[in-house]
Length: 623
Ligand code: ADP
Ligand code: MG
Ligand code: ZN
Image (cartoon, protein in one colour):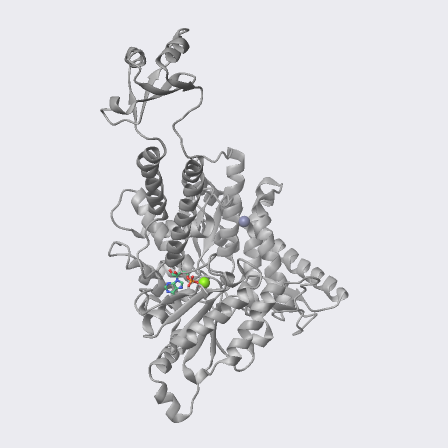
């Protein structure tokens, strides 16, 4: 967010430079002339002749200079003091005595010690303090407030068009947009709603996984609403000093009520809105609690009909304090979900507008290959593709850039120059072909899109990408079993070909286990437990955040069921690969040579092998 400043921000460095300059000038020009009256330079023999002529009045002998004053009538050129270099001169004292000059080893230049003390110590300090204050005032003016004016909310006020975002920038998310449009409309025409007796919710909570565009939606509302828009992030309440959070909330709401009708947006509200009892223990998190209490009090305190609507966003609705969700507070929830195929394509297109693209880009393919990706990830894919096009020296983004950047976002960059010896490379190739071949031989498994054994910076040594033909919302038991069998295919290939196993299957094992566990504990797909719930999902938006809700004995039984599913799947994969050893060898050799093969090449080889096989089996049957 960088749209809030009303006055152009001059870099701080200017202030420092100006202050330095002023000090330097003072030092160079003002101080010396004030402190030390003008001193004339004379040669030693001139000095001696002045002494001889008895025109010297007072003399001060220092380590290496002699300072002196002359009698009034001799001072023609206006200097108050004269100085000359000191030469070893044993006779000097006698000569001075003879001339009747007053002499000493004291410096006579500073006649007033008080003035000199003021000039050298007091004045510079006053000057520094004054400049410091001036700069402080400039800083607060430019940074809104903060360390210097305690307790002021530093919410940024957006005015229409300042965010530069509108609903057109948010692809998909139609339900969320509709809900928010209603709010904007209410703020524009409150009478329409008042006439029928409808009152709008005080608070609207946007909930959804990270990167789905919650913050973006709020910015779009700011762009669309022709009312003031205050925006603050939850974490900003909790920063700084104890007690500040509550004060900030108070100030924010005071400002909002003055500016009503307006919208207040609290991003990442979970940072202040966490359940108050959640194991804070002794000492607890008093600061956050105070802030939350203040927020609740303020939400109750203002009159919704006045036209202040509070918008908040979170990806942890489960962790929010129940009090926040009570009617009269955030009683309307707007889900912001991960995009489906159409949504993904739309998001890709929105972001592709900012980038020069070839005309023949097939967004459909990219959309299919990115099932489960969030809007933020899709935006990143477009950007990575543009970067790749630049690296390749092209002026437009091509399909190939997009395909590669999907892999970068999913699996990391290609690791150039990774040292993998030939035996390991063979193992990796067979492992990946194992996955792909098992998938191809299973009925209804997702088709293979790409296989590669180019290592990635994420640590993946190779991978097999499957892409569903159409978007799925339901998975049958068979689909899930197929997934598990495919996951065990990699390790199975290693066993069949090399008769040994490696550490390379850890990721497969993790995924197979969590799928098998979910089948039993959450999807009711085991005979033993039927439709019994054994695990609850704590947060649907943050991965596998689940907890068991069964006895220890049941948990042990679940473990053994999971083991049975995986064992059966593993056996199935082994059988498939043993039956297809010839095809596997051919595919692995091809992959070793090419390092990457596409789904079409894969199917081509598979068909060829099948065609060669068939006559043999026919002959056998005829005998
Ligand atoms: P959240 O706040 O939900 O975590 P953001 O609003 O910060 O997500 O989204 C991050 C970025 O992802 C946005 O700046 C935008 O570029 C992109 N993005 C996410 N969802 C969409 C969408 N529906 N349409 C267009 N861009 C999106
Ligand atoms: Mg956000
Ligand atoms: Zn694998």
